[in-house]
Length: 281
Image: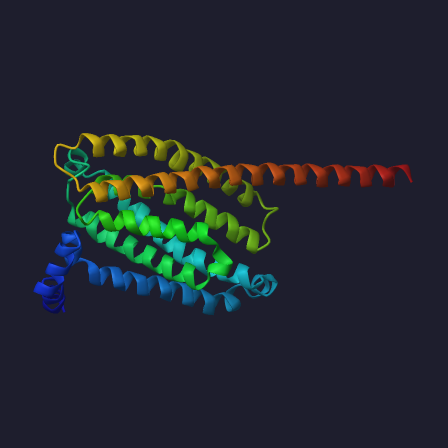
């Protein structure tokens, strides 16, 4: 099996194709990308098949869009757990830290191949169900796919792991929405997770993401090793778009939290009025 895989990735055709498109490091990993795409589709389909048996009551309450997004979140959560654990290891790599722009790590590339596969699946799945997703999610999928693909040029393999820490907030978001689907909004776990969601999104994406973005732009401008202008501009474009989406989504989270707080206050006031009315009677 190993010899067959080696022959596949080291074939002259594979090497020449990826050299020609400026992604020489991808030649050794493209089968992993395709396998990962298939794996996330399998997770999505498995959730679609198993959930009606495991959470039958909740599944019956959901409409078509809610069922679809429930299954998408299972694939998303699997990717987030995998990549956050891998990213922590990559960030601790002293060799990559010393050369964050042009440093190369086979461990990082194996992890990023899974992410490229995931975002390829995300693009295909989002496009196939664009009516339930919207173009904002499609843009996010394309930009994420592009920037992790570029890491095989190779470029910014250290920063790729840093930005992957964004996925910490994805985990809390998926738990938050899953608890809502299960009708557990009144449980303390829902509120604790909600606070973790807001905190992780703010610190991981807004604060840490902004700091990382400034560093990346500075590194690209001051690199001692020439960087292909087109590649550098794609990185800058994806960074602007993805950070813009993060700022926008954080504002949505805050507005939703405020609205939910107002709704809770209104319900509490109505209950108090109802109790007082009973006492008067």
